[in-house]
Amino acid sequence: WCLVRGLAVAMLPDASPRPAPAATWQALPDIAGTGSRLHGRTTSGLAQARPQETLAPVCSSAPLVALASSAGLLAAAVAQRPARARRGVGRRGRWSPSTCTSKRRLATPRAASSAGHAAEASVRPGGLAAWPGAERFLWEWRPKVDVHFVRQSPEGDVQKDFAVVMVHGFGAEGSYYRSQLEAVATLGGTAYAVDLLGQGSSWPSVDPTGRDADGNTIGEGEWGWGDAVREEFGGEGLAFGEPTWMAQIDEFVKRVVKEDHVYLLGNSVGGYLAAKVAARAAETGTSKIAGLALANATPFWGWTQEGAWAPWDGRLPAPSWVRPVASAWFGALRGSIGQMLGMVYATPKDGGPIEARLGQLAERIAAAAAHPMGAAAFASILFAPKQEPTYGDALDSLAARRLPVLLLYGEDDPWIVPWWARRSAERIQSGGGEYYALTPAGHCPHHESPEAFNQVLLAWLARREGLEEPAETEGSRSSQAVQIERRL
Image (cartoon, rainbow, N blue to C red; front, side, top):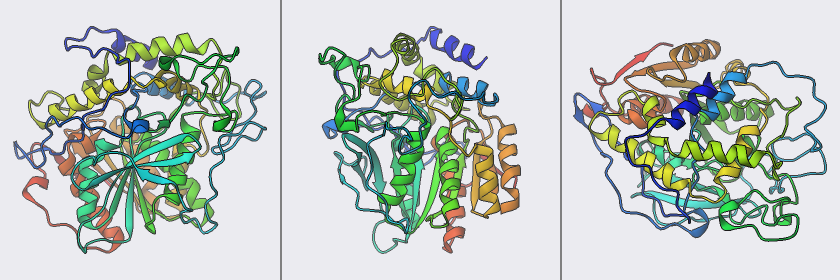
């Protein structure tokens, strides 16, 4: 039903004008406005249309990579199917997060130090400031692969030695955490919001499959559909999706983040990834991840299992049959972005800041879909295999190690309904985890109700770091508009 629902939504007529796919990459307006409807009025930082920004050419736009409505929910529908005995993923061998066990390898990253601290990372400015106090950067994670992130540092003498790394949901990008970036900085922490590879502004700087079998250069609008991966990318094995994203987050924490205490904050599939990365890191005994905050984390992702048979494992180059299917699906989803977002917010038509932020988010995602590798990245993400541990096992492992976990969920999410939040809460209860429900708030409570969300998040961080909890302000008090209920 998830597949049918997603495709049906994609084909519904939309009363609002549909943005025409751009022929070239575009500079994107900032969509990360802040503010929330509390006490029946609008609080600080209301989202408004902002001037377009010009970023460095390699990070000036992002793709849609669809939204989790159809692709993610399709994954949810089949994620719990038992894995069949594997005879191998075609002829490609087995894929681990950072390298392939066969001779096919992803581009080899610089090794992190044995102590788990950041090895020297190649980081450069990534364009104009995202907003006052926030800086954009590009991290050359692998050859010809740039990861875009926003960093907000505390001002004055309030800086503390902790950081929060924020991981976005499917189809979004890091700046929709603007309110949380600013809030963490006021507490003295350094806040990072990273774009997952193949989303936001994190992309290969050139077409990784830039020539066909006859050696002809492929057109600008067809990145990723060539017959071989270029040598600059390590020869073969470039991919998007879960294995790559987990490696990206892990290495970002080790190599880019300098602070000694790191908290991961993830929304939707970003929460799913953050939980698994934290659990894997905790097993090493040298991790600097000090806690995990989850906002409506997706409890499952993907539909193929590492080690089980699959028609394709998501590594480029893609089989010829993938392109027409993925391109058609991707194109259909691009025309229904606003409808999909409206489905998962509790109050998408509030006539105020929420509707404004939602509209800006839809516009930015639509404009970002012009990236020439959008369809190929979307296809790779769909077929990338799931990784161990499972989301549930990750929470169990973190609870056993008593790593602090905060669940901060929108109660009105039609996808990750409260039943899933309760299941997650049961898993973290033995480890001292906390669970708060916000209503009205949907799938992205940090974006829909940022003041209420930040009230809980900052108090939790302050307790973890031994800091004085921030004073409750008029804007952060729960009222009839946004209710906060602690359930664990």
